[in-house]
Length: 179
Image 1 (spheres, rainbow, N blue to C red):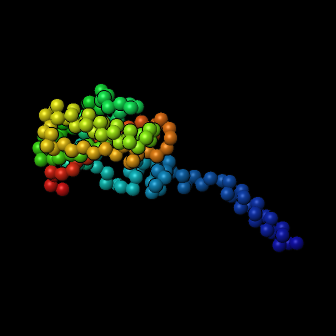
Image 2 (tube, helix red, strand yellow; image 1 turned 90 degrees about the vertical axis):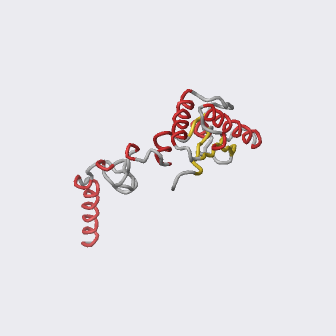
Image 3 (tube, rainbow, N blue to C red; image 1 turned 180 degrees about the horizontal axis):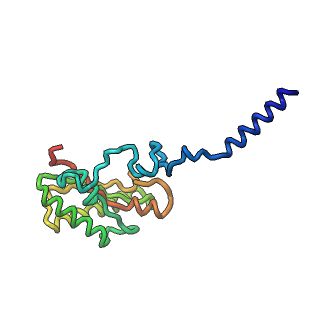
């Protein structure tokens, strides 16, 4: 009987203690990946993040982070948006400044439609980007295209937000840089 009373008292004390939040352990928001508090939020697993301003302007990392490696398209469209044209203007400038670089332009589509239709749409999107870059002075010999249609989605789900991310052309630096 005395053991039962002791057990009930211990459970009650532990329950009350569990409800009390230890302020010493909660110093700020956690980033959810490596347990860093708010002071290091955004530094997910890497305390040596490098800003794009410190990257070599001829590097692939600079191209991806500062110039931009993709343009998005509207549903069933190959025409460039003003934002897409602005990105391609920056890509053309970078490519002209780095004359040894060759690129591969990947055309993509969302999951709506048949495989054949989306392969053709992806090819037209890649050609649209290639033609635009060529019109800005990038030699055709440095531009290759490929279509993936709906076969390589960036996002896999059936919402307009995902579809919009998948309707794209991606410029991949394929060669010409030292490393």
